[in-house]
Image (cartoon, rainbow, N blue to C red):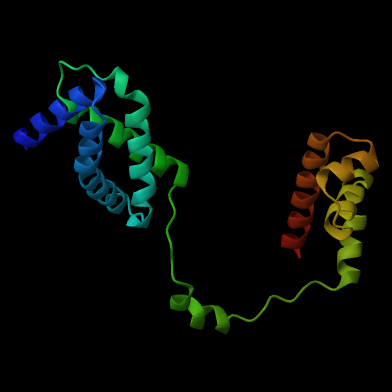
Length: 181
């Protein structure tokens, strides 16, 4: 490891001094190490390693853009690996925590559940009548007429925030009434 770090440090010094061939050799030498590290980091985070190449490209771009900030008196590898770690963390944050589940594992369970029966329209209308006029208008506009929050706000001369609050309260009221029955 120490020999490789010394080699990388010498190549980076030469590259920063203007030696294009040394820069090319450096990038060619670090890329497989970065690729393996990205795959390992993705696997540890429970992510698919197929996105490792994108992370490697981000790392190499950052190295290229920031190479003049590297201290030529310091070893190169710790600087490189700090960039790599930060780019991996950025990629994982951007991706969020996602768990992929094969839907085929649940196909029998999903198929066996009977579809929920909708309430008869007469019942819905009677429940809407129990709401305040403003709640009824908002629910009618959004749920029945399929209007957006913005369209409903314009139509009813309300702010979008007020429409959201009224919609939430109306739905909560309907849910409470349906639970009673």
